[in-house]
Length: 121
Image 1 (cartoon, rainbow, N blue to C red):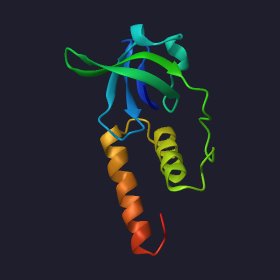
Image 2: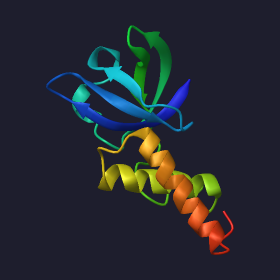
Image 3: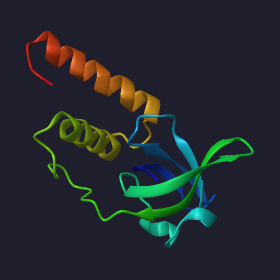
């Protein structure tokens, strides 16, 4: 079972993409694989899902909301993983069209800059 956040979902076309928390490649999701009405799967929504190999690559199935807080400063915000999660959430809210790969590059750059300034991450 994987976890992640909805990057974008097109209600009209019935598909979107999820950024896995593992930092791996964005995963395609179709409306037929959502556990609830597609209207609740907005950018930044935290989800858990299974991954299958589809005709065109990885596909999320059995996608459901997790109930984890979608807001900033949630549990673990004092840890490195909490910081990464909070940064990811902020990026998804402010720039929802970023891909998972772009978010990973941004997070790595922020971490490198912080370490260069002596901030322990």
